[in-house]
Image (cartoon, rainbow, N blue to C red; front, side):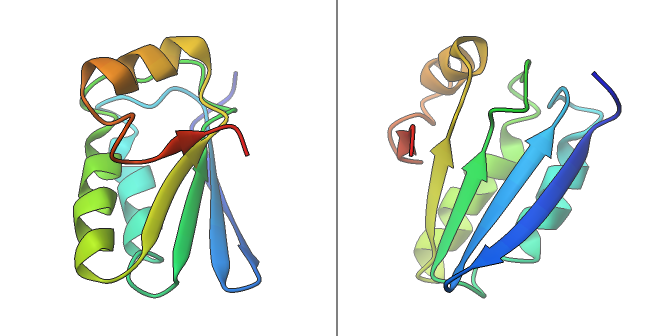
Length: 104
């Protein structure tokens, strides 16, 4: 897997973010910047984690921020495509339910 990156796609008033690579303390700031550019500016943000093979607690910090900021600014935040390893970390950190993890 190459270096970490985040692609952003705008569709029908919502935004789809696709991070790719390991999401950890060294790459979290890239996801945070991408989320900061869209949360509060669009009605829905979907983060497709299918390209993330590994995430640690520090890497998930931007998702926790997005949840809080989104609820304050009327932006729905949803995660899709999390691999079992990443879904486990989401579950352990308590982020799975509030962030509305789903497959779609």
